[in-house]
Image 1 (tube, rainbow, N blue to C red):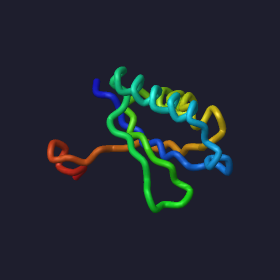
Image 2: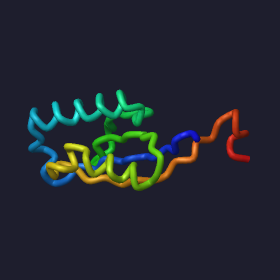
Image 3: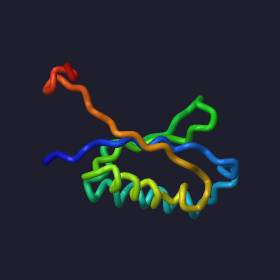
Image 4: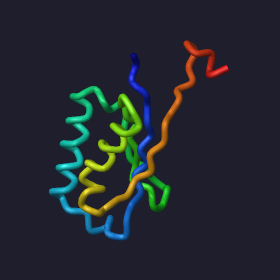
Length: 99
């Protein structure tokens, strides 16, 4: 069975401007780990959207697994960001764009 996709929107908290280099390094290491485990489809940062830091598109077996991934994100665990998680149904040529 194919893994489901989930969108993690990362929102800056009031302390985001005090983000430490150590936390950024831990954040990048977490991205590498998720990628190595096949749980990361794509990720990136937002520019020009106040309050938004970035996003992940995750591949997980369940909403609960995706939630655990989000809760383990160093930006979240250290209080620099919060997140919003949503299931994502991909529209593609193969599924006739969900028609």
